[in-house]
Every structure is written in C-alpha cells, then in structure tokens.
Length: 134
Image (cartoon, rainbow, N blue to C red; front, top):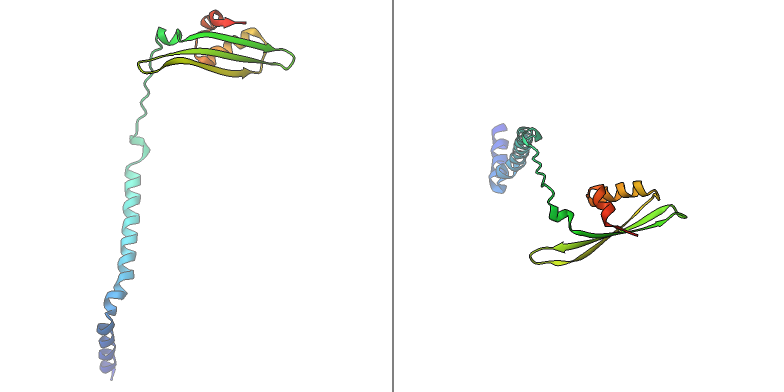
C-alpha cells in the first residue's frame, strides 16, 4: 500500500516535471550564496591599501604670471567690503581674448586686501601691487 502511494506520487512528479521545478529554488539559493561570497572576497582583496595617490605639480611659468593685465579695486568703507575686478588675457593656440574675474572681500584694509587677492588669483603680493589700479 505504501509502495503504491509512492509510485502514484512519482507519476505526478514525472507528469508535471516537479523534480525540475522543485530544484530551481535550491539552485537559486546556491547561486546567490556563491555570488555573495565571491563578491565579499573580491572586495576584501581589492582594498584601498593597494591604491597609491600620485600628485603632480606644474611649475608656474612667467607667462602665467603675466596673463593678468590689471586689477581694479573698489573699496566701500561704509558697507565694509571691497569689490575686486581682475582682467586676464587669454593666450592660446585656438582661443584669444579677455576674461574678467570679479569677487568681493569683506575687508577694507589695503594690506589684507592685497593678501586675499594674491591668494585668490595665485599671484605673489608684489605682482598684485604692480597690477592694482584705483
């Protein structure tokens, strides 16, 4: 009796191909665990310790320093800020022209302004003094 029920169930398995459909979730779980494990191993082995930072610094050429033609400074002592307009000449193989850079500084002291302009435009302070136009 037990064998006949078992044989009867096996006929249903063969008819609906249940042995194939029941094995798919098991194969999916195995694949999922394997991929998770492989990803974890790869991420551990490819850590950031192997990456080395390289920085290259270009020396400033005199042509770069000569690009600024004038710096116009307008000091508004009543409001406590200064407006700086720097004119830069663009020289290149394809492009030529003039670029104006404008920014505000929240100080009216001339020495502080010169230092801030030098930082902003990446120029030496004595070059800023030569280019300043009131």
